[in-house]
Amino acid sequence: MRIIVVEDAVKLALALKRGLEGEGYAVDTVHDGVTARKRILARDGQYDLLILDVMLPGLDGLSLCRDLRAKGVTVPVLMLTARDTTGDKVAGLDSGADDYLVKPFAFAELLARIRTLLRRPPQTLATELRVGDLALDPAARTVRRGDQPIELTSKEFALLELFMRSPGEVLSRDTILDHAWDEDADAFSNVVDVYVRRLRKKIDRAGEPSRFQTVRGVGYGIRA
Image: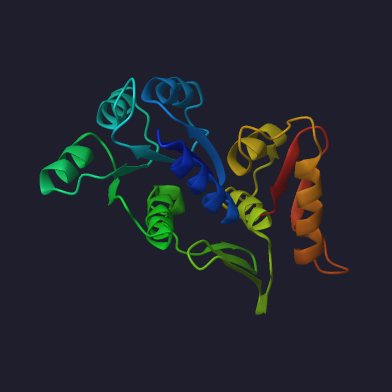
């Protein structure tokens, strides 16, 4: 899952980036509304969630959110603000935000809000993703094959979740990088190949066909 954080407080933005990446999310950061607007419109469909501060230089969060919605951008929006009156919350939600979190907040609550928003789209309503005997719970962050739990790193979990949300589809390396790594990832590196190999070692069983599909020159997927 790829998240964009739009926050003008640089230290907070970097703290959120580190914390969310530690949970397996790919995170980009922007510090003003005008740049964020350009970035999101140019990459519509690549972001799974927008974390948006209300008070931003250039273009405030409320105006940015309204503008994105008017242009048909449907990415879930979690709005952050120091303002906690009912009127402020109503203004945020009326601008098109999906949720509203008041600063200061506990990181655990932020994660819970994110998990809820990422489950909302029709294709992700299921609380547990299943492909054959392989099951992944995005909220509990657990994976098992049959009755056997499988321990994954945060990035391995993010990659497997991406595959399991599109079973039977072959995803290009560019698509995988867009959704599972941040913008600093090197598109010419073999990082995707390395992580797919790691998943194969942990999930595939000896003597059985691999759960993962490779199309040379195209990309990877998980067999439906």
